[in-house]
Length: 350
Ligand SMILES: Cc1ncc(COP(=O)(O)O)c(C=O)c1O
Image (cartoon, rainbow, N blue to C red; front, top):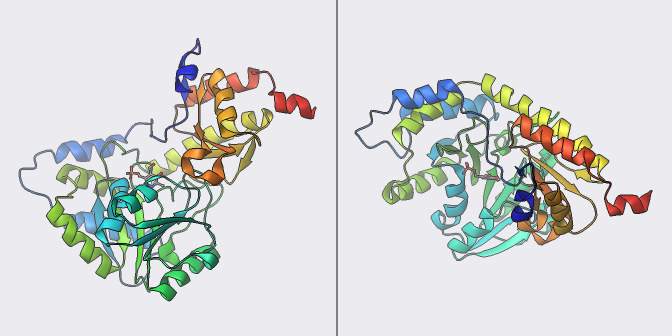
């Protein structure tokens, strides 16, 4: 489909990859540059200043309570991929429509992997469960009841609950919450995973962190220390700068909201129903046809989207459209959609 979209005479608008395109804020670039003299090894645990910055952010932004520890990551993807190995997990649960790396992590650990519904009532016994709110790809957010049900499953089974919250600050008319605000101060077996890739347009730096159960984080830190999984010193300084500022996050949120508000009506006009899509960087939608038909139709317009099949068998009639394109590119996509002839399925309805 990429080939077809690329053949469009006016060029491709690639809305298939969730990679930020807006600049890394200048003050974060400056923090990186100013710490480029780094002859010594950085701490796996993170510098005192970085640990403090993460801790303060967890208290003020996430509403974390009780005893918790923090640990910087080389982006959150590596943790998603390696957590089951660190924990020697034997059975890993992850959402049935999900970011593919949860499954990859289970496979790397040679664990049994089971995709599950949001509601934990029927979850099998396992030693690790991933939840993801706001979700990639759907933009769905967990309610407090859903978080508490997942926590209760973890407590009943003495299993680790890992909550991937890397889109937390990009709610659209809603304020997504963290699992850490729902633990009532008992963070045993709970980990929240965060990333600055999207929040601060820092994907190229590789900067993430986790927050949660001090005993679990202590174990993971020890393995990472010996495995050389250390965030570079200049990136640690950039992270401190990024976490100490909210204004750039608000600016970015406004950008994504603007793009969403332009794209959504144009998609609806072409017969797409928008589902979930309450937060994060994606529009999750369906025209009731196979995802590949929707992707092919968009490719004729030179617009590249991702078929839901990439995120689970249950999503084979959905597509994911990323808002990670410039305002100008989104305008072009909207104008191509508006000028496109109505789809066959729509004409049938009329
Ligand atoms: C749900 C989810 N988790 C984790 C990641 C990894 O992000 P990073 O490694 O840049 O922190 C992504 C990236 O798109 C994601 O969508």
